[in-house]
Image 1: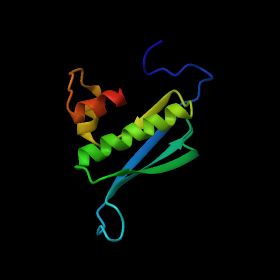
Image 2: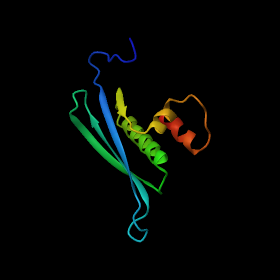
Image 3: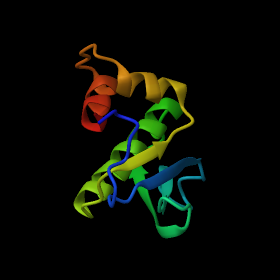
Length: 114
């Protein structure tokens, strides 16, 4: 079976996610990065949505990567399989697809996402 083929009877899920960086004054709330995702079935129908927070402000590529990692962890815990992710960060996409080993923070986050 080719990679792009979906076996009959196995539902395909689509997970789209987004990241927002909140930089409010520290006396109002701790600086953190918020993220969210929406899970849809193979027909594009809503299944479930989720969101979360990661402490600290991060550069955009790190915020996107951390959001991806949290989303993948959630999908794994909920035992979703055959998930197609939509991602709009070229840096994160290339990081996940790269075969190079990187033991700095970026590489470790990418390794968790593979």
